[in-house]
Amino acid sequence: MMKLGVNIDHVATVREARYRGQVHGEPDPVAAALVSEAAGAHGITAHLREDRRHIQDRDVLALRRQIRTRLNLEMADIPEIVEIALKLKPDIVCLVPERRQEVTTEGGLDVSGHFQSLEITRRRMNEAGIEVSLFITPDPVQIEASARTGSQFIELHTGAFAEAFAQPADRDREFQRLLEGARQAQSLGLQVNAGHGLNYENVHWMQRIPGLVELNIGHSIVSRALRVGMAQAVRDMLQAMAAVPEH
Ligand code: PXP
Image (cartoon, rainbow, N blue to C red; front, side):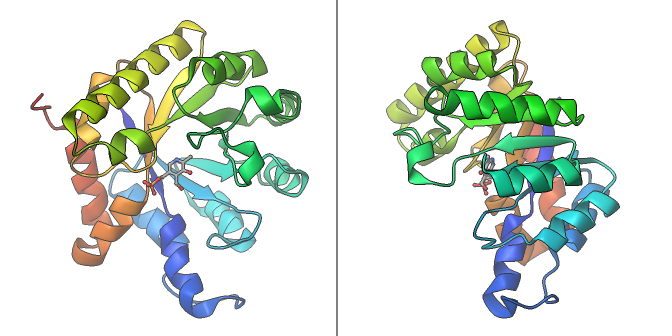
């Protein structure tokens, strides 16, 4: 069964819209994480950005202390954040691009272009007992480079699939790329997660990718939570992930 990592960044986005620069404010992403766990989420994902546009340092510290499942810290491979991660000791880090030059044309991390730095960061994280995932598009070159870094996981960028979802031919092409990318990665010994743009309508397609470990989903869950509450939104997503595909 695929696991669900709930990304709580956008809870912090709403807080920062009103309370930027203050050390309190609502809504609280940590409270949302605890509710998500109680509703069945298998892990919590948060992105500590260099510009601190949503999640703040105090949030990741509180998450580390309080959550009981798995903490997945999304982060750029930059010295300041690497040092924070090494001290924080999340269970896993997912290295993501934040700056234009780190991104492939399609939006994932350019692993082959930043191989040396990523390999060093991967090693430092692993030595601290932290697993490493790389957020990439299903591009054979990036998958092969990811395996060479020695990372434990990749997270396949599902954004192109999600954007193409309403156009069957494009959707099927993007889905095929994800399917083949997952297969290639698994044959190289990588474990495969997926995320970005997944929602209650498209998520069941992910079942058709054999061996996917975890989906990281944020925006659609936080959006639905405005209507039904966070716990119900998480339960609905777990149900949508397990729904029988119609295709
Ligand atoms: N995975 C990664 C690596 C991401 O950067 C994001 C977006 O923050 C997500 C998953 C979640 O995407 P969404 O908010 O569209 O569900």
